[in-house]
Length: 70
Image 1 (cartoon, rainbow, N blue to C red):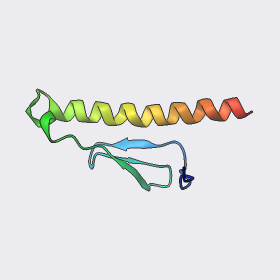
Image 2 (cartoon, rainbow, N blue to C red; image 1 turned 120 degrees about the vertical axis):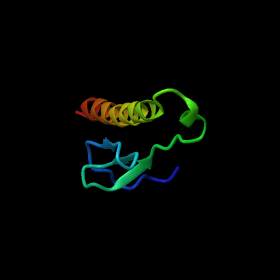
Image 3 (tube, rainbow, N blue to C red; image 1 turned 30 degrees about the vertical axis):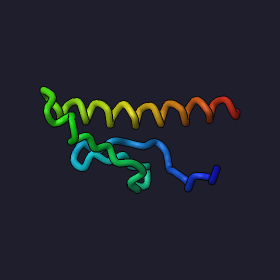
Image 4 (cartoon, one colour; image 1 turned 90 degrees about the vertical axis):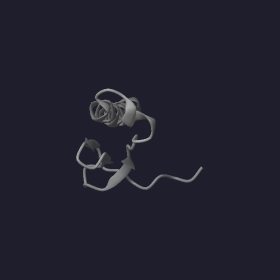
């Protein structure tokens, strides 16, 4: 497996563009769900909730691995 390019932490989710950015404001992921999700009630809220969840999970895993190394 190739080594990932460096990501500056923490990462954050931007609901304006549905992107996840690193601390240097570089886009690292795109959370897009306008296929089937657009037919659901409160679709924007569901998409943004998922985007924030993913960003929080990335940060949590990073912090856990960082603390395991120390």
